[in-house]
Image (cartoon, rainbow, N blue to C red):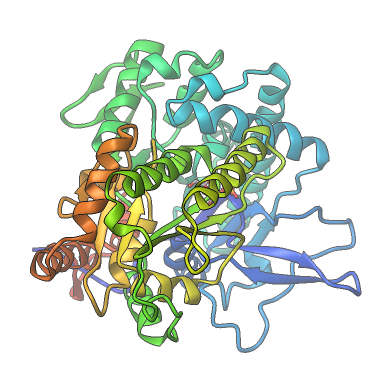
Amino acid sequence: KRMISHSVTASSLIVVSNRLPFVLKRTEDDGLVRKPSAGGLVTAVAPVVVQSGGLWVGWPGLQMKETDSVPESVEGDVSPTAGLKSSQVLSVNLDDVDYELYYNGCCNATFWPLFHSMPDRAIFNEKFWMAYKKVNEDFSEITLKALRKMQTDHPEQVPLVWIHDYHLMLAANTIRQKAEEENLQCKIGFFLHIPFPPWDIMKIFPWEDMILQGILACDLVGFHVEDYCLNFLDSCQRGLGSRVDRKLMLAEHGGRTVRIRPLPIGIPFSRFDQMAHESPNCGLDTNNVKVVLGVDRLDYTKGLVNRLQAFERLLEEFPEHIGKIMLMQVAVPSRTDVKEYIDLKEDMDKLVGQINGKFSTPTWSPIRYIYGCISQQELAGYYRDADVALVTPMRDGMNLVAKEFVACRIRDPGVLILSPFAGAGGMMHEALLVNPYEIGTVAKVLHRALTMPHDEREVRMNALRAREKIYDVNFWMKSFLKSIGTLIEEDGEDVTP
Ligand code: F6P
């Protein structure tokens, strides 16, 4: 068994991600305020950046003016970025053209659908690609500034540059080249938060070799699951002719050996468990109607249309549920300037209307549809009080909703229905797994979930909770740091299961 200390980094950390760990909002008097982001990445990584005197490079979510500066965190801030000084934040500005061509274009209209194996939805456009290269250069330049600052402040340490996600797949290349030229020491790690597609899909991207070389400029490349690692190794071998070792998960590139690792991300389990204890009654468990819950960004990868159709099929084929169940679907607005997302919103509005029109009675409607953001605290109440969670993406890197749901089941054990095409589907074995393309089967599985005896629900949920509690987001972060050799290991907390 290995023991890992609480002080996790042996060197300073420079995190590079498209978004900063908070968003900036403009106030009425033209100032800026920080608004916390709630994601697991921020929860786990921000405190380590604070503790290691690290830096975070990212986009603040709005256009910064020449006169703007990142505000300090305010007194009483309890978010994970409390204590992150403005001097630890290096913001990357995206102008309107970058936002349109890099973010809406290359990231969200090309890579997002392609990496989720939906190439027919992907748009390939040279202008998008030029903008992507330019913005990746901008991020690299600012990261190099961060490295120079580190070298001056802590010359004894070798900093770790940790790049996140599909927005920044070229950045490592420039960072490595220039750091070598300037004799700046660093290790570079990359983690992809979405799937890595099979080579057959990857090769559709006209400049796929540049992407592969960009990622291979790192020392360690992390993916959620083994399949994505193998897809990546396959692409390196077939696209670049790299020598790869699938068993040891290594790829040779430019005279270096790059480590590839499956490192499935977790959630801040205890925070969700605690929120579920603190969340007031949200009204879901009071009216004798069983609640099937869906919570997703409004994204075509999440399988929302199929999900509504499956719910409709359930009401048709198992009419005993009419009047006794409802689907509560929360759809969080996302990437609202991208056409596919605008179209999906219209399709959802129509379908919800149709199904409700078909089945509603004066006192009951089958679907409650919330299009908007809801707080994590409120969400924890829904997760706790719903009867079934329906997590049925067509494809998903991991899917954290499935994990958040089980973390919040502190009272009645609910039932998790999960798609095998989410990364989480390969690990959460006690969920009811169902192929979201088979609408009739989803309806049957829903019926099974709604009628499952308490004992079976309890056994399944206990096992699901126990696993997520161990493999939480801190475990994930420590595993990444351990894999790249940037973790202090001494007597302390035991993290080996
Ligand atoms: O899961 C992938 C991801 O891009 C995350 O990095 C991000 O937090 C989330 O989807 C939301 O996307 P966006 O940053 O485009 O709003």
